[in-house]
Length: 232
Image (tube, rainbow, N blue to C red; front, side, top):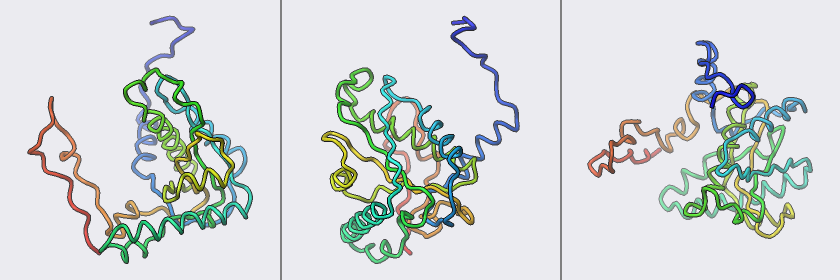
């Protein structure tokens, strides 16, 4: 395929451009602490365009974004997260007390709150999903990651909150039957980024070595499993 009307040159990035891409990847953090402020409309639009340019299986583009402007709705979302936080803590057993010390959301503190959801009718998209229907989730996660990296490039923080009852959140935001919320995104200015992922800094978990994740040809059962999460 060499038609100049349907292709762009496969030109590598400059060293500085490559460095910027990798910097965004390595410095991206799941933020929970925000500094208030605002996200300018043109910046928010840039971020959403970046999300909308994510890859999707069968080009199904299963992401939908709800910008939560209402303070009343924010408070209701915050309450849903806090409710699930308590239930999650109980399910963790001996780590319940440790979990309750963690900050798990910034819904009331962030400049913007976006709810990412998948629309009804996704089953109509067969291409790439006949045997792997969960590819709608994978595709939407790509959009979230695009937004996350773009936010870091803009000097903003973003946190992906998944501690909520999806049916309750769908009802709260009047989503149609079959729609499925996948994340509450807290977005906005931050005073600083965590030097390491917050859960690693809090000694909740640690990043496994890449070598533990790599195998050749077939599954290697002798590969060292990821380390257990450390105790605080």
